Image (tube, rainbow, N blue to C red):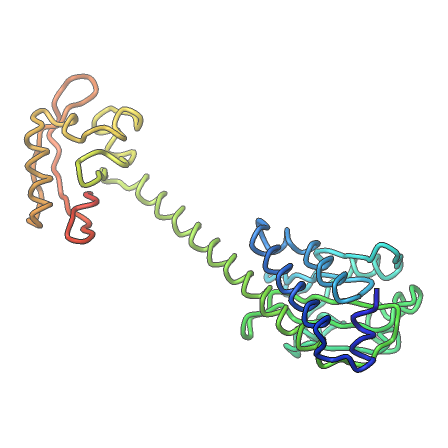
Length: 297
């Protein structure tokens, strides 16, 4: 279990075996972050991959609750032959503000921290660490620049002096996981923006519909559908010309947009679902890609 640490302590720094171990960790982290639904879902696997490969006995993933401004324990991992009930219980129950406890101090320092014997540091959970025989401890921030998303800590039953190589590995891992959080937050923000825009279009007080470059309806909002007494499935994926009393009027409007002519306040006779005719005032413009009309609204 401690072969990796012992090789470093024994002077085998930079060996092919160590390089392979670091590469396995990096590949494992990348694979987990690439396939998991979220970083939080990946947390148990990250702890297992890093802890097993680098020879630790226990790991914990701390996530930042931005509303509370506290780190809370998201996941705990133990090596197969390790039991640490007191420390695990204390870890799962703990929450830390910035500068408090081991994870909180790492959050504040924004760099990895190593203790040779955690139980002697006078930190929160130190008595539990002594009770379970846990000694060497490493914790690194999960961050992107100065934005912190959490922290990851590992402990060993053996006491080891700080290892520059391990600290460097930890710093890199923290940045990798932090970037995954950034991507996740960006995707979430984009999805929220798309949801809000879709809601804006759907519930706008004016009618809206869009077609592709050939005049096939792609979307129609509630106001437009209600004006013609129609349902979305009766309109979407059908030629927009079928909604006009005279399909040639629709064709002319599309041709004007394709020619980049303004279409503003054009009155057209459109067909209601009950067979009656409704006057609808239209504005239209288009989206062009490579000089071809690809989208008309």
